[in-house]
Image (tube, rainbow, N blue to C red; front, side):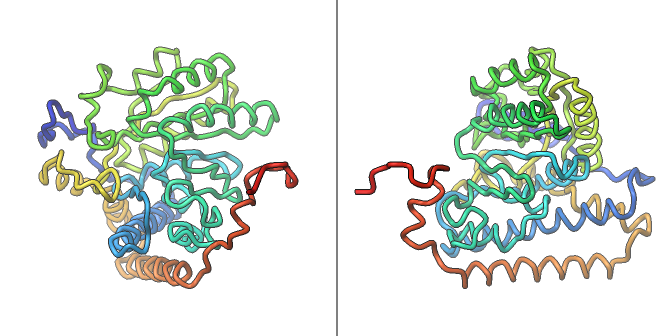
Amino acid sequence: MPPAVSKGKSAKKGDVKEAKATSPAKPKFSKETYLTWYEQMQLMRKFEEKAGQLYGQQKIKGFCHLYIGQEACAAGAVSALRKGDKWITAYRDHAHPLALGTSPNAIMAELYAKATGCSKGKGGSMHIFDKEVNFVGGHGIVGAQVPMGAGIAFAEKYNKTGNLCICYMGDGAVRQGALHEAFNMAMLWKLPVIFVVENNGYAMGTSVQRTSNVTELYHIGRGYDMPSEPVNAMNVEDVHDAVARAAERARAGEGPTFLEFKTYRYKGHSMSDPAKYRTKEELEDYRSRDAIEAVRHTILTNNMATEEALTAIDEKIKAQVLESVEFAETSPYPTADELFKDVYVQQDYPYIRD
């Protein structure tokens, strides 16, 4: 489980045992699934590491929230859902579209605020968007995406698409009133939505124990009779299984599910956060349970691929990330007239320019 912290002190090592990323003795899924997970999570990891490096060089500016350590939360959900399903999340949003298939070039260019970015350079790190893969965006206002996720699910139900919406949030967002309003409506109308709280233990730098009397966050869903459960999200298999169960309920017309993904971020809340509120021992304990290494171990011990094959994947990903940097570096900035585009659907809306 996420670190138990009180009065500003870091958790003890024994408090995090539930989050251990273990590899099954016998694989639960196909060779192709494990190799896909490995490649997806490695791409997320290496992309984020490069983004952090570039931020330090002031190539990327503004806010930048990295996903390093939480990769299984996205990869396990992608494998459990369909291509037509919609995705929405908060501002820690680079990894989800990568897992869904958005080009690293388009995301890196967006971080650079370039016109070739997936949001035309207008959104930056916190507002990644890609309609082609049904990623409805990262959102900068804490908790604002929760009622939006319910609204997207309402549209899917109204249009009888058979699709659902998976709506991610951070542990700080569960304190927002909009979440409770959305939960009530989602249950009342039995909307096909999976609410996911990525509980990495700290809302910015403040532990769950210092901000909520309810520290097992999945219990909040039960207040609305919403099926809710904790998930060891340092284990990609567990994430897949939990999301698959929730998706089956949603598609059967049984309504929403609330999943508490118990995970951990290796970096601070954002690039400006030195993360002094936790100990090095706590961080290293989680690193020893890394989801990517767990999948790698499963692949190798079950002879799904050789070390050489995995190294080839690593090299491929390294080249992809370097290509994305070159693409972003050489792309143009948006022109001045872009300021007045994509503001209103109605092209001749009579707004005042002067």
